[in-house]
Image 1 (cartoon, rainbow, N blue to C red):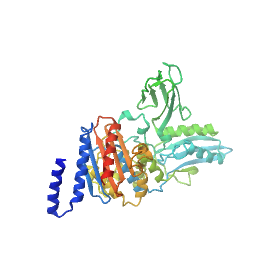
Image 2 (cartoon, rainbow, N blue to C red):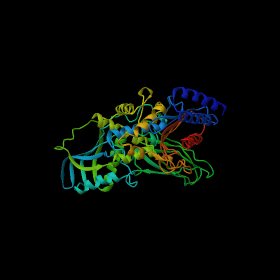
Image 3 (cartoon, rainbow, N blue to C red):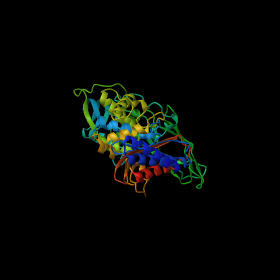
Image 4 (cartoon, rainbow, N blue to C red):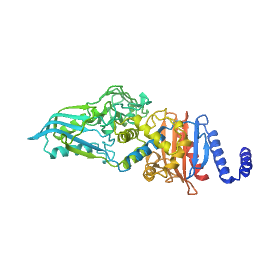
Amino acid sequence: MHTQKKLLAGLFFITSCLGISIQSYAQEAIASVDVELLIEQSRADNAFWSVIVRDSIGNILTNFNADKLVTPASNMKLLTSATILDELGPEFRYETNLYGVGKLEEGEWQGNIFVRGSGDPSISGTFYDEDRFYVFRQFYRSLDSLGIEEVDGALIGNNSYFDQKPYPKGWSWSDLSYYYAVETNALSFNNNTVDLSVYARNGIGQKPDIEWFPFDTDYVNFVNEQVITPSYSGYDESYQRVLGTNTIKLKSNLPKNYVEKESLSVLDGAQYFIDTLQKFLEQSGISIKSIYVEDQPRNWDYNRYQVLASHQSVPLKRMLKHLNKKSDNFYAEMLLKTAAAEHFETTGTTELGLRLVEDFVSNMGMNSSNLTLKDASGLAPSNLLTTKGLSLFLVNMQAHPYFKVYKHSLSVAGQDGTLKYRFKDSPIAGKLRAKTGYVSGVRALSGYLKAKTGQMLSFSVITNNYNESTSYIDQIQEEIVQRIYQTY
């Protein structure tokens, strides 16, 4: 308290000399010192903390290490999703077409059928009542309505809309087996994952039973070395896809009667798409002679290529909600490559997409010299920014014509997304729209808060290099946000 009094006395002298109102400066000083004390008195005072709060016109109300570089984890999506929205617009839709070259005679398509990949990340059940075959069912019905019963040619996937780099730079190899670090391909099915179910219903010491979607497909090879343990023991997860293959080793220990469900990544998502589509069509009654994937672009001359089936996705504004509320890395990476392909009218790449992000956020007030961008999702630990720049970006986004769509894509405290179970029984529930972030040693929370006085604040709280539990870091961050809510 003595330190606060000395600080305020000094502020009074300075602001009196300058003719500036002391009220806002005193408030900032008290709030900043309060945040610093809260951190210093926690068990995570040895971590690096960066905290900033701005009012609706950008004035800084609280500032603690806000000009220092931090790893933002999935707070990176605040920048990339805004860029994607600005580039594509909220009503943008993907179109994925089946083209035929040939002719139909007595139920036989004599020629090839091409699936032109458009980069659509949503060919899954996400927007279709969890019917993961919804789009493939549409394709089948279109082909069936034309009278096609067999294809005396190849089903060819064209994967040229994106480049052939499946991952951004900087991702950890240890993440690549899991759903949150899958490949990006212009042709992608079920988020480029197989969905594994494990049932520990056999005897102790035996292997659990497994099954997987789609069709227990032989596109992947599961090596089941899992063991059922006594019911009182803990679940010990161990999955690893052998890099460069679709062999997935399962080495988990599961308590008796335990059920585990996990989505695991596949190698070569475009080939997986075509392989699965062939199996689905054949199970539905349309036989296909062969399949393969090509990476070279084609001139889709409508005089040569006949559209046999077409699917249009939900609009971007719905995808953006999924991206931010669920913090979906796959959607972030796919949509950024799409924005690049559309803007530059060339093959979509992560590098071109990040150039768009840098240009957009610079125009929105961020200092590009304080930015290091490696991916769209924030999974790469080498991404860097300052909370000072991020918070200014959030302020300036409020003047963007698509701000309402952007803001509504963020999780609401105590209600949905990654904030569904946070701030649930606090005054902040329903008054905070924000983006969470997590990679190992990094926890982030940034967005918009309607304070107790009713004013709208932009804030960012990012913690790096912590060795306490993430739940404890969440607790401290939530206390900071509570203080901000009460103070302003």
